[in-house]
Image (cartoon, rainbow, N blue to C red; front, side, top):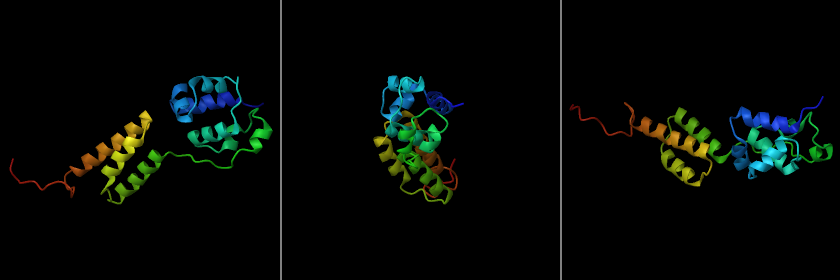
Length: 152
């Protein structure tokens, strides 16, 4: 028996803790469009499936496999899609640099990223990373903090 594509989309969305509005904003669609897809009242285009697959970090074919998604449309789906945002990429790079002790210049990079990022969750993640860098800069033994005068 095939699974409903709409139910699968809703399950992916809910697993991320997102509302239909959250998904709509990431997808560049209306909340009504997301609702119609999830209820099975509309069939997403190949482009929309590719975008949803990237958002949910799955292969497009895996997203529609076992559903009633039209075979002719499924044949035109890309094999792979981009499954990360610029913010996710930059935060991963920061994690790698932090592990290697190379954080010079990251506060400025994150400040620029914060100006360009519209998504609320991603803005909070960038702000948290900047706060983490500030704490690190002022932690005991950090090289960028001014030396203590020894006076209390």
